[in-house]
Image (cartoon, rainbow, N blue to C red; front, side):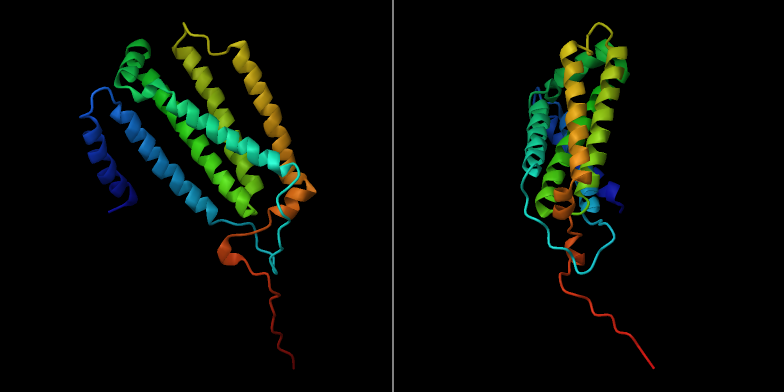
Length: 223
């Protein structure tokens, strides 16, 4: 049986069980669990990747300086995504019914994609904290790719939601200011973790299977 087959066998009984509880949106919880499995598996796969190993493996510089603010920024993102999911009305069964009647099936699809974006951001941020404190060499590249993807997906979601739910104002001044500030902060963080000397001396460790701080002796055959 394939991996998707195992996921199907696990999720479907759980969703059927949750349908027995009144008021609970079992499909939202199923989407929550499915995205956790998919994005968690993706994080596990990426964690096993490394930049070309250098031997002996450099010893990383301790975390300090502006890197502390980078860690705080990621932690705040974890809090923000968690809060958004916790306070979401999508947990209730009536919420998706309301969205369906107001925006048809495309409205439900857009909101489901929004849930996936939040889950991607949450699991991605937790994964980034792991890479950060492990001082992994792929951290600078990972934080850049993950947060650029999240911000572009959020912008696309807001645009589609505005086109579908035309009576609502998604492009408020507050949201525009928030997006601009996020873009500035992310730009500064991307530059710092990719080009600063401290970051280059800190995030140097490959996957644990490739770490070797000892000199590698290369045997040479001579005549």
